[in-house]
Amino acid sequence: TQFYENNKRKTIFLSFQDRFPWLFRLHEIIKRERCSGSDALVACSALKHLYRQILLHGSTVLTPPSACPRLDVSPPPDVFFIYLHGDYDFIHQRLAARRGHFMKADLLRSQFDILEPPSEEENVLSLDVRRSISDMVGEVEAHVLSLKHTQQ
Image 1 (cartoon, rainbow, N blue to C red):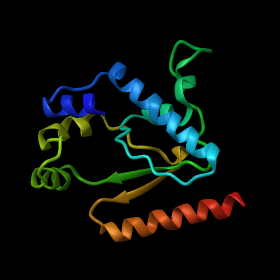
Image 2: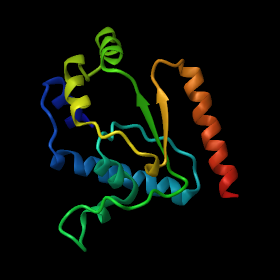
Image 3: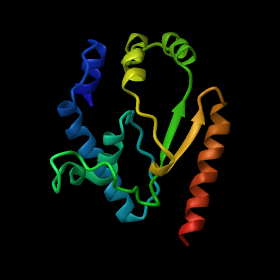
């Protein structure tokens, strides 16, 4: 969103409260696409486990029975996360080289500091960012096809 981009340009870090409306909106988009039977790709940096749970389950992960967020909710089998991983220096070099993007390279350290890498239980496809884009796209396509085959 424009709010998010403006804060990144100014190197202002977003709080949990800043992120929640955006994550809830993305959850609604994911839910809508799943209900319609469409294939969709939603891209965002859901760096924390809680953020990924909100994308999957909306506000239900924040509601009782306990006062703490429910982080044990399983992902639906037709939704998976793509985890693009790489070492700090390599990614920093890429960020520093790109022009015209709101995310500046000096924000990368904070992203690495708060990252909670997804676990296998989160239904994740891990891809090394050193691979070619065409290789990664091919692996994502194969993963989607395998999910569709499993669901039939």
